[in-house]
Length: 238
Image 1 (cartoon, rainbow, N blue to C red):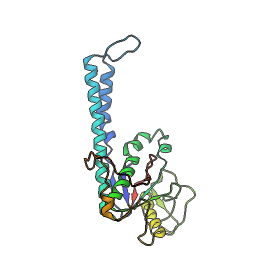
Image 2: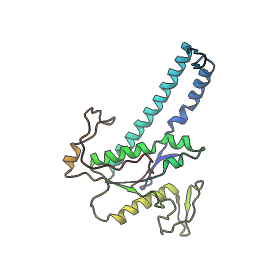
Image 3: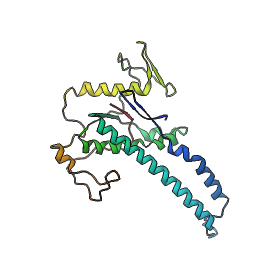
Image 4: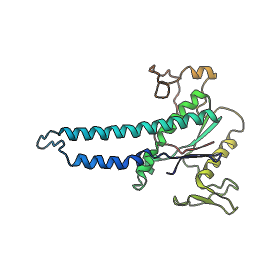
């Protein structure tokens, strides 16, 4: 998880890794709390003041990591929908990816489901065309130059190599395939997955309350369901 997002234009956005950078301090605080007297349900032991103070520090550290991650994802999703007319994201089985014990913490720390959720409703606000690629579309295995599809492509192979002499980063290759997929399926500027109903002014009048706007008013329903999945999404956009 070296990159947070890879654009079809070739831009690679580095993964800030907020949780990894806080692990050293988090481990120290947890060791410190283990040496102090905490709760004991069997004997009714009450925690010491120092144990409570250490737990408060742990909670503040987790809150800092969550706020930093949320802030970065909001800035990324806002920039994407404002600077691009078409955004393509790929539906991924993040729950299945988390079963890999070696990569689970790194995958969870990225926040794939959150960046998809933000991109979906911000694209509706901005009037940006949003396309969600099918989960089974072989974006990483397909050559963006000749269209050949590989039978297997292991995760450790970070450079895509094809018989047509293409040598390209596998994430950039997948991003180009997603861009080509949208161009092939939507040659004209027609309706998309989440194109707002009516005019753009009417769509913007029903913006949702949330962290990005600070509004406290409830969302006005448009009478249709938005496609939001907690399974996460890929970060290839065009």
